[in-house]
Length: 188
Image 1 (cartoon, rainbow, N blue to C red):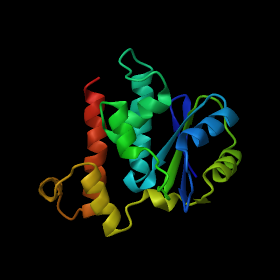
Image 2 (image 1 turned 120 degrees about the horizontal axis):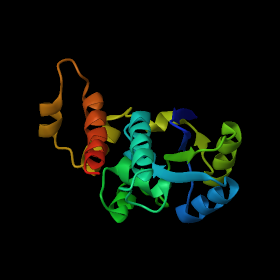
Image 3 (image 1 turned 90 degrees about the horizontal axis):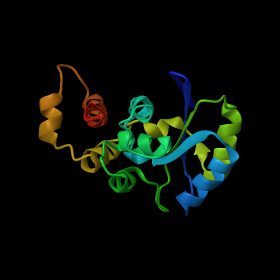
Image 4 (image 1 turned 180 degrees about the horizontal axis):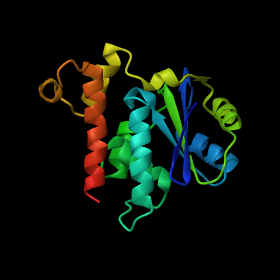
């Protein structure tokens, strides 16, 4: 489990592998019922470029949600927009939304109240029927890197042009994906 303090909020992120979520809406409803006051979002981990993407998106979502420029009614949806770098909720769901075939997942919780992280992780594990594994968030394979480039529409030309001397391709890719979230924040 990854935890981070963002102002008065706490961020909780738990990755899962070998999950089985036939109905993500039902799983989120059940989890939200178990954790009152926690804004929860379930993401496809194969479309996440590391914990940095989630932390950056959470910071931007919290800032935006507390301002008059927020885009969504719920912090969890605001987070989804920033995590995806998309303007429209429907597009954000298409990009990061969990489907019945999703096996690697990330559960993200943002809360102003204290939360028992182990209880959160255990209850989530029961709901998604998966094995806790935060490494699913990392870019560890060429396949995931290729899938991320396709999902976020990052051509090799952009990747190569953005590369700094000695920088690994996966680092550039992560930076470019986070940049899409930053651009959304700048438009506020």
